[in-house]
Image 1 (tube, rainbow, N blue to C red):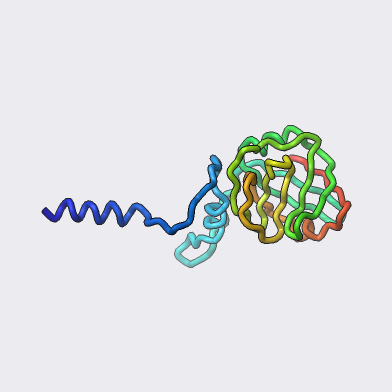
Image 2: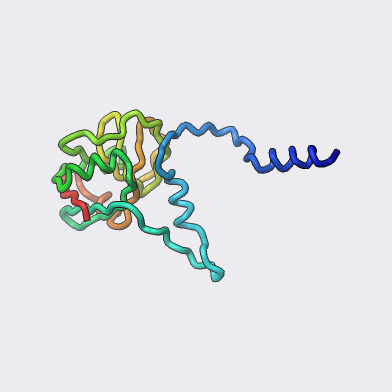
Length: 171
């Protein structure tokens, strides 16, 4: 008699009660939130932080004043970018939180539901087909497609003045 009641409690207790937040992302690749969680997770008995494993394709942006490197996930937008490299692009500031660049051809990634980007994310904004590097906080954006993370040089990239150029290449 108690077994069915116990089964229901365990089933509903483990199912993850709704938080009222509606998830609208349909990304196929691992979500950025999981990547950020791995970066901050304590992974040793001594409490040391274990860095995330580096997987994916590396790119480098070279510009006046420095370089920035990013690791990209395997997806349609990344493949679209890699086929156009190396490329020299104009770097524009957008909303005081993003550096954007347009490649000769729009990046793939149109039709994605979007996500809430984090500082350091690399993304494709589908409606414009451009490459985005987030150096400030931005809210959820419809049509945003996660590509990867900036590993180094984000501050130098963020400091670039309007009208700057960069060479993007595969490393």
